Image 1 (tube, chains in turn red, yellow, green, orange):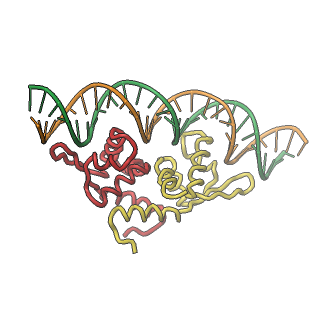
Image 2 (cartoon, rainbow over the protein chains, first blue to last red):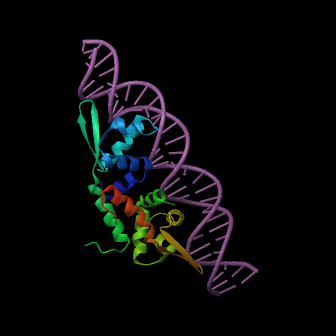
Image 3 (cartoon, rainbow over the protein chains, first blue to last red):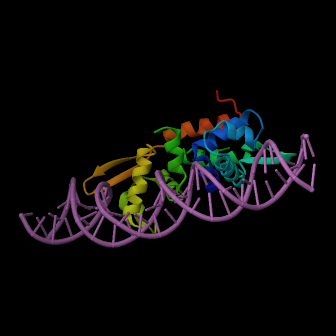
Length: 90
Length: 90
DNA sequence: AAAATATTTAACCAAAAAGTTAAATGACTA
DNA sequence: TAGTCATTTAACTTTTTGGTTAAATATTTT
């Protein structure tokens, strides 16, 4: 975890799009997968990268696994960026 | 350019460290290179990635090429992150 | 219990990224 | 102008990343 894994996770456009989808509502792996032209296995790997970075959380509900956004870890990124911009973070 | 190349550029720890160095003061390629254990050629490539992303600017001064931070492009990243966090960006 | 559905994991492949050394370029210096 | 210093570019290698298909796992349905 930490800044490195967060930024790394954010550096792929598919993963960013997944996060944007999850900003609106929680979705199952299949629902997420449907919206992309890559295989379900590929999406599953993206999800596990996002999960390792703690950017998303999952909960199994029967046959489905639902994913939801955890935006809290973005705070660290924002702080780092602000620091670089020379802003006062009070 | 754009969000993708900015975040990609930020996703490498050496490049982030270079940006932090340049936050303090402008430095020549050699001065930057000195502080890392990789070759000068490798650092030169990192610099060109940062430059392509417009995160840094360079000016030749005689024998040296000086690099300086251009933090303005970070704004776009901040906005994207804020959006994801569901903040009102006024 | 067997079949079907949702999702992940394994094994593998191709393309991209990051490193190396050596050669090229640009500008100063003796 | 020949030599040296600073830096980049070229050619190449290794590692990482993102994709694929097939097999495994978990759960529900029939």
